[in-house]
Image 1 (spheres, rainbow over the protein chains, first blue to last red):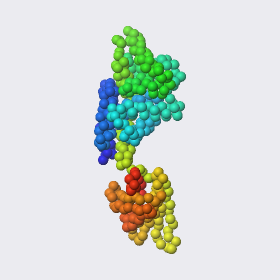
Image 2: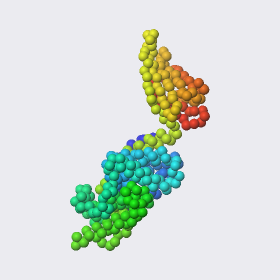
Image 3: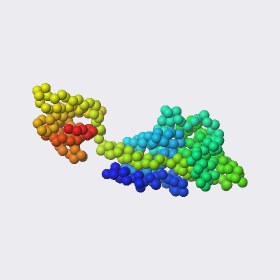
Image 4: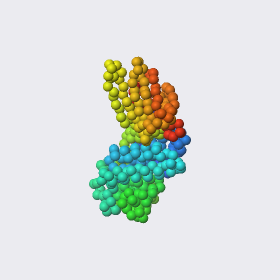
Length: 216
Length: 155
């Protein structure tokens, strides 16, 4: 029964799952978390289909969090599968539906960090924290999309240091990130991540300003 | 450009990544299938036994055409030995639960229950007059502990 429903998903669910430019791209994490909590609550009450909804809602968020650890796409997918199987096994231990989003991102980050460390593909900790990436290091995709009329902000994100990009990617998709844990993951002193987040955002603002000035 | 608030910047960053590195096509469906499959196993609250050994017996030394084989399933210190043979026209199963303990054995085919019988302290049971096909056995300890289920096997 459940599998039949899953089979129908590729045609119906994916357009919603892969958010596109101009779509609900700026949906706030809080809204996603709310949907996830509701789906988890219904699933826990015995509605098997609600698990599909939970996976659909949270998978894109988990993807971005895990990819911040510079894992290859297929490795990232394995990490996500491990994360979802952990949730299924641990369902009874999550008593508060509102906690499910944070639970999932925490497990996904822990697993991503473990795999990244094992494969030597972790986030480069020796990077000068706020060193600017050269503009030509921006991905071709990002360049193409930017030329399609996207904002200065995107161009600025392209030129951020690797570590700021990784940090802000996690921060942007998590609802209330646990700074202590992220700090350990990124090899930063525990107390520094709040200020680092602030500095990365400030750096981004400066790059946006700069780009604006260049255009004048 | 006027100074952007943190939330605006973070929303823009989400848009950036959603456009430049979106979740791959089909991944959500694959993960939904994996999660649903895992959930269907745990919903039953049953421990799955694994086949650890399969032994073919040679045809009977006395010229009988009877062939038999033995399957050994195990999980968490409990072994289930099954000798599958044919007596005349129908397959039969002789089973032993090791260590011997009282259990209810249910024979399942396509989720239908064919029969249920109780196994006593000796841990031995017989299932004569079966029909060929795929079967699963479910073992429910009479002391109320978690039931076991074998994977499907063919007789």
